[in-house]
Length: 94
Image (cartoon, rainbow, N blue to C red; front, side):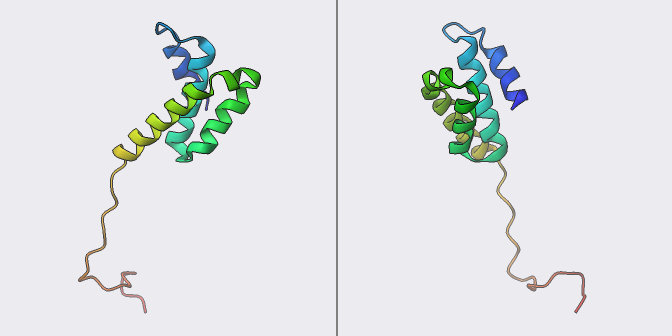
């Protein structure tokens, strides 16, 4: 969460983005990238900021969705076990 907050504060220098919005968006985006739990990430970012969290919630939702889709797209697909291998590949132990 702290790395996301730092990244959000760095992005807060963009035109039209204030510190609170950048902070909340960074926390939400980093939490969803690590946890893969979008609703929890929005909730964490919103509750952490209190009353100001409600005003930036739409921005947090957009940041969380974008981060979630990108992290799913960049995650490699696990390789399947070939069909010709036996189910027990524990090294020959009975």
